[in-house]
Length: 232
Image (cartoon, rainbow, N blue to C red; front, side, top):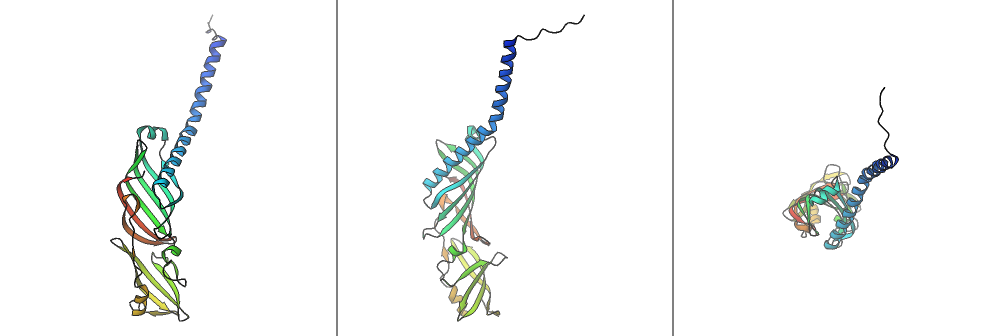
């Protein structure tokens, strides 16, 4: 005659059930707790950056790429942090900043990054603000600047390259047409119109150095890089 194990006493079964349910609930809550901690850290870092960088308008958007976040936070480092912010130049011109930070570490409330790649986008209205009200700027679709204005009631269209020389942004005409007829972009009138349009870059935040400039549908973009960046 076979023997069957005696059932566990009722109190033991209840304890086992309670442990099982509690463990399952904790496991289910871990991702939510991890994300809550990440969001809290993103908000804290955004406030610290806004307090340190006076050119920032409002509170930047910060995204920390780390999962599980709590493990990275315990180690005191994050592989990637993205910062997006609205800012203004020293002359009050609007700029959108996008900074990708690599190997960000935190020590005693201070954040540093091993390296950073940044893009500062000046909308066309901001980039051409000093060139007169009748000037229209846009992207020509090939990474160059399209400049349109009226000359003696006739439409003048100029295609120009935007170049970076040291800390100076230059606008160089490469093609032009007046009322639909091609004209020499190196002609004296066009060269005179672009005289004095060079822009000397101010000191960039956090020790970033300018590397290149490009034209996109969003505006003129300054690309910058830096190593050993202090954020706060």
